[in-house]
Image 1 (spheres, rainbow, N blue to C red):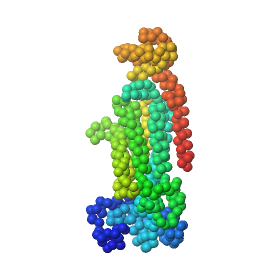
Image 2: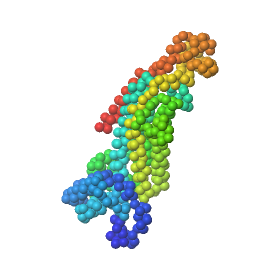
Image 3: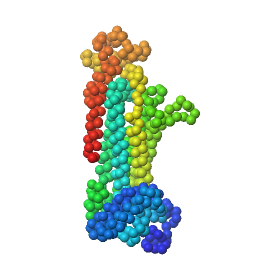
Image 4: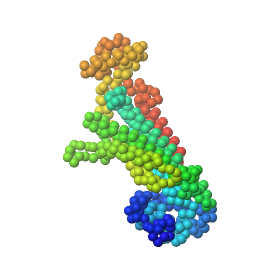
Length: 468
């Protein structure tokens, strides 16, 4: 190696890297997070090299023992990270060589940092997805359980944030659950494409050593080796796909957060969040602020930014690996952390929501939420829907002037708009009657809500069963 530089690749260079460039191009300050996966991949690589005869069993054992000791040093905070060594890979390899001598330098046989880092990131993302999925499961279970308990709790349903028709709180929660269920499917689908092994692609063209990539893939739990060496080292679709999943998930959590913020306000007064999920004001002693949903709503933009970051990072790169790809880790790491924390907050908070049933019921009574039920009643009596729509519109206009809801009007008041209306109309004008009338799959009837909750519970159990 040239005396002018201490870099692992310094043989070709006649002068050391500029100190600023050294700091500018180094990634060790953030990619050291990949150390567990880097060591895991190296142990599998050494095991495979010994199996095909490139390393002796003694060399393999020395490498594995040394790597295991390094893992302990890192976990105990004793490992000294070096910026001149650039990245997590060279830091670990240099320390391994310090510990076991020249055998440590043999570990890199048949691989490159290009396929090494691609493998490390996939191992990291696979582990991260498993943690995130566990939080998704907890959130879904919490939503389903609360929905089941609140299957009969009536609240207003909205369009344009205007009272539309009565629904139940359980039905509304199951709408949230459907959103998260789709996110769950997206995450599991993403994991399938992550679980492909780049190791063995080397720098870009494979290696001349007699490696067995299927052995390494099996040791690392990958479904299969990547098919094409050029694509294997340069592909970051899986990172973009994960941040796309994260963006859609945070969009959903943000919508839920917006509703939670509204519902906790004095103007809505639909729910109460336990104090542990809220904070107060330094100047207004009466305040109880829904900080958790507000922060989740705010972090959504952060995730969107990471998606655009990665899309832009990859859009102009020719094959194969380019230094640009070093910039994938920080947005990806932050996306993982943000998604995990937001899901944990929601999984803890949602089951603890306390509905204010009286407030919800009273709000549902306002805004003529059973108007559609009256129109449907008239249609069942033989009135054409457009005529029924006009009749109900007139009755609502009357109610606005009289300050009466449809259910508060007398039969005579209602009959002035249509002689077809009879005493049985009050069966459909009550909130309970309106909700119960939607007695079909996907409808608001309490029995349907409970049945939907059970189907959701069964579907989630099936996913958990497949994972086991």
